[in-house]
Length: 167
Image (cartoon, rainbow, N blue to C red; front, top):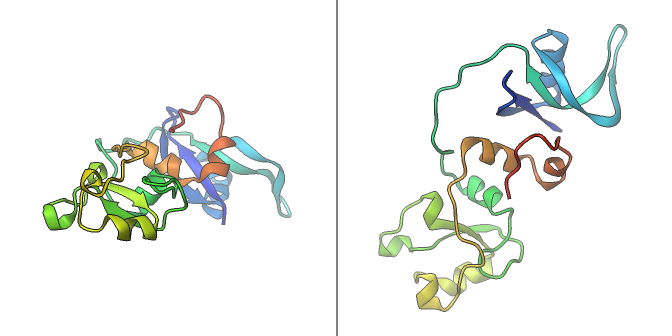
């Protein structure tokens, strides 16, 4: 099912919702369609609206301040776009830069996406000890970055130019 990006009234990203939830928000006049999928429409007896890709809430929603997105294996894979930090191939696992055996933790700066082969080859060593330099340094995504990254590459490129995009 397609994910629809929800923006606050101030145009800051809040979350993603299913297509059905986005249509309900628009029909209840709680949101307006900022960008639609070209050529696609939702039709019913008394309804004909474009299929929303980005909606904006009509009222501002106060969100508690969060410095960073919560860490998760899925989040690391999405942040690194499912690309291995050692060879650039498709990644399916998460590797600890400083291995857990040496005291490494599950944090954004200590984990990278890795293919199973490189993860096994590096084993319980640091990249320097294994002679496997990182192609990209790990970083801490903001909650908005994490949400935009979760949309997927195809969806991100179709978002409006005025919306801030991550690497």
